[in-house]
Length: 231
Image (cartoon, rainbow, N blue to C red):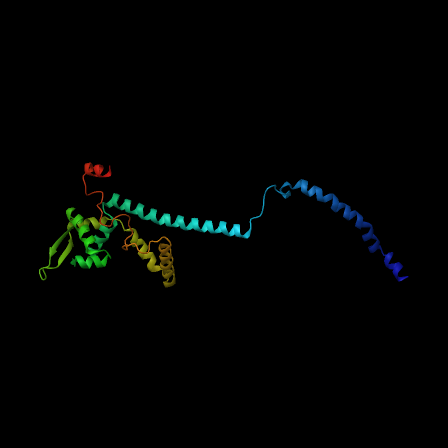
């Protein structure tokens, strides 16, 4: 009797009666969903990338990013050097040397070389060029004739007052604001890049500039001679 009552319950009989209808509705709905959503159809010829292929693609993206960054650094230095010569008629080393003379006052060639981390021979060549332009002059010390001091002329003082800020001064200011671990990380990363490019043994000075440090600037020669040299 108890079993018959369960079978005869309205809930059970209604669920049983409705079960075939629900199954039929599901079967009818499947083809319709594919028709309504064409994007759900499988794409012919498409395959999933393997894990190794995906890692390879990600590595190529990283390499590209590194090379682009290096290129930007080179371009930034090159563009700034050209702009400096165009606006002030000076190369970056020449401007740095003028600034060092202004800050140090009466200073020897050796002290200047040490201040801007260039060889004494390079500093002497740069001073020769600046002296020809009337921006600096040199005098032997009255106390020690072996020592030669460099000074700015009035023209040199006016010149440097209006000169643009060298690119490396911007870098130095921002580098000093970094935390110590950030500074160490940058140094370590750049040294590793130099090693990877077989550049760790190349002699270099701490001057952001391209080309020879003691090269001539564009305003030292008359236009006719400049054109001949460029040819």
